[in-house]
Image 1 (spheres, rainbow, N blue to C red):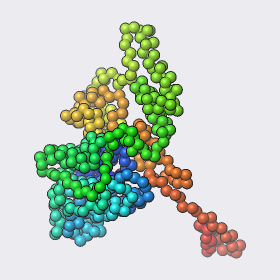
Image 2: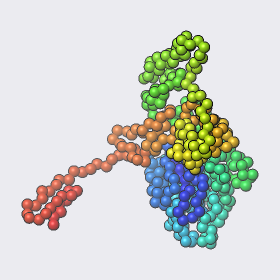
Image 3: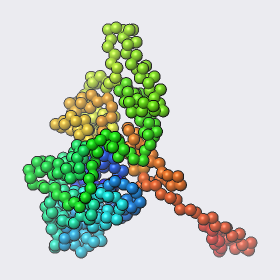
Image 4: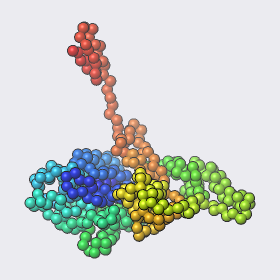
Length: 444
């Protein structure tokens, strides 16, 4: 289970370009790795405190393999203490930091009180101090903190140093950590952070050195090496029948032969195995039937992308709109296709670039980029579900709660409080005006 916070748009101090993108990237990465993610973007003090307390309650009442808190945004060190800065913070001087900032020790206390055997805190919050003119004893970067038992604390850079926000859509540290997690099947957590450190050192020319403090005694893997174990870790509370229904629901409307074969291979005795086998046979026979009608025509056995001969718009705004439409079609969520190439569109293009494995030289709207997008037929970017849903196959499935419990808007199962029925006292027959509210009688 993970809590991911990204603060970019500060109200009273300099905003940061990438924490929002970093938080979304990390949320997607952790969801793919099987984490249930709670995400906060541009959180004020109250929201950060409230979500931190709620996250602590969930960890204490849940049987989870690991708990993780990720933060990207402004952070400051004052008198050896580290503080994370909400977007509405107003600090006249350093004496107010306890009132306006969130002490990192609060995060550690939440993790230390959980039942999780492994706790992870990731702080990409070492940008330079935005209040340095008002702070007497503030120091560059963040201060080292001892990790409680079973906890790993990861910093974007070494103590007392400043991390880079990044010239692209993501900070060097978060981008490297995301890649390291994705490429980590069979690798323990220590190896994942070492790989991220190597990538950051290479990208920044050794100017930024990520740093960790760990007291973890066991082994933790973001992705188990064994495929069956990975499937189990991704959906511990989802039954085989739920997976069967979810998988079939995702492909039933217009399946390809490869999707039907994959379903039958995964669920040979599934609820829809007979239907899938029949439809597979029909699709496999269809090309031959058409070939018999028109021998000169070759019909492919797979559903392929449409012919990539559509014209490329010459107008820059129409070109950007066409690229946005294609990104949305491929599940990369570029937002409204309005032809305005802003932060959301760039984030979607960057997401496509990572998951398509094309490694395009430019992710700005141009003819070549549009042609590459049109080559893809199916979803490229991973599906990100709501906090009230689990990702099952290619479908977001609403979480189920045990009998007697309800699902909250935060995605947590809870036991509703019983309401007591109060007897309404009859109103007085006197001349005064009386009414009954919440079991109490009120009269003029």
